[in-house]
Every structure is written in structure tokens, then in C-alpha cells.
Length: 118
Image (tube, rainbow, N blue to C red):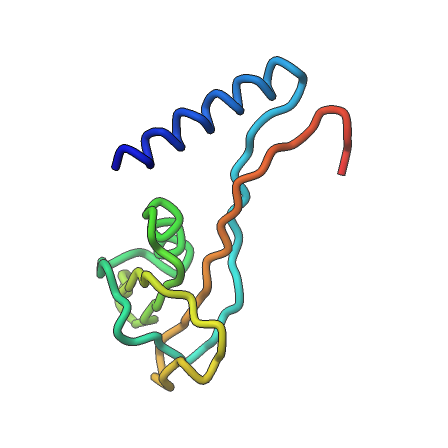
């Protein structure tokens, strides 16, 4: 826990420094690979009902150790969202399960420079 606080403090100092020099820290979150009708088993850290795949993915992005999600599409307004602590490197690690969607989370922290428009 102490190491994490130390990292967060250092990150905030870096962001402050970058801001003073015309740059800013931003977080880039995006969907990774998506596999329809597949499920990652054995790595669930949290299960919750959400209103759609996007809401499930947002839950993952807010969770420190979430690496992927399983989302069960249903005819109900809410679907079952599983946050996973693992992101498999090979598709054969997934289990075929109709009605589910597996999505890898791609989380990156970077900074955007005011001097470079890229």
C-alpha cells in the first residue's frame, strides 16, 4: 500500500511539472480485443449487473487490477458483468460460452505535449 501511495505521489508531481511546462497528463483507455461468445473462467474478481457492455467496461477501468471483462448479454435491461484479474495472451485460453462477450482492457497512462501535435 505504501508503494502505491508513493507512486501516486510521484505521478502527481510529474503531472504538475508537465502542466507548468505546457503539457498535461491524460489517461488513455480503450477496448482491446473482443471475442463474442467467449468467456474467461477462473479469474473473476468482481461480479455486478450493468446496463450494457460499455458500463461493464467502465467498471473495469475504475478497478486497479482489472485486466479484462466477461459480459453476458441478456434480454433484461441489466447484464452480468465479470471483472477479471487476467488478460490471456492466447485466444485458446477462453471458453466458448454463447451469449457472453470477452473484452481485454487496454489501459495506458501517458502525457500529451503542447509542443507536439501528434
